Image 1 (cartoon, helix red, strand yellow):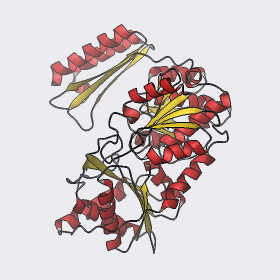
Image 2: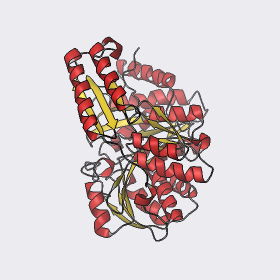
Image 3: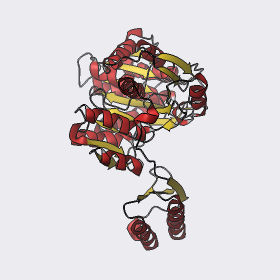
Image 4: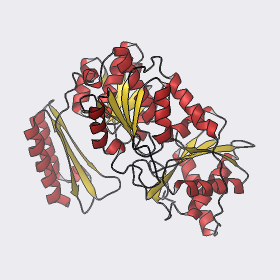
Length: 445
């Protein structure tokens, strides 16, 4: 049976509708509990959630399914996705469940499952759980929630771990934190104050419906304004489940995931801690990052879009630093997944040691002009079967030489072809993007 529930980031949908309806959430708990019992005689699973109004009832249904097959659940309450991954890996939990739809609006939600390794479940295990879910739904399983009480010690254990990853305190550093009205709303201010920073927290009053609403890592205007008005040294914004972080410098400039990778790579390399003198990023990372790393003697390996693929390549090659332009950054010395609060601690600690701001720490990073165009298509064909598109791409690549690059790919979820052109010459970027997009329209648009 083809997978229909689990995507690259767990199960996601509109809360209350399949596959995020009560019966399916309950069935997932039953199916996960059955798998857990093969790993332990008395298995226990940790459950966490972000601040969406649907989180409590979804968590209760998952816990109800676990209880149905004799598996205990411990509830971390509102916690970050990397927090659940950490607890799962570093405690006796057989698995961990995070209820979150990350950067999506509050109407959506999702279920991510981690194994004891701290990594998402292998495809085969997800497939096994999925088959059991459908069997239970077909048999007419009755949704029955379990009552959950928050174990306050769990998130404290996670924050204690984060603080052990830095050796330099943040005393005197003035920061603004945009919590996105999400999972970081209570945890992040506490964490950075404990680290010594002077903290101003904004968008830290979740009401179940304002998560990611005009704030957070995808909407930085409020953070930029607050940093400048308060004369802060820097700002950082998290998304709904705080697995990504985007920064704002003292001058109000946005410091994205590419710039963060450069800051971290320079620091790790200087301290002899950048394994293999390499960084892993995706095909969307700016050519400017590649050029800047090259000047530092650091290689950049590229993967397909998605932190899943970044992590796979890091584990394969032994790299210890990787991430995405969107702010998912992975430090495998400390975490099994992208962690926004961990990333923020690392960058702030680097700044404190260097006595420099983010503008200075990103010196030498020249961001190349980049344009991305989506072309709606009637079918997805191999580019090799589109001769006029291939011709345009080759001619444009020849013209660019080593001063730019071109990426043409199909969306995995929509009927779209994505054309990305990046070059030192903005005029070429616009011209070549238009030429290639028009060729695609003529062939399959």
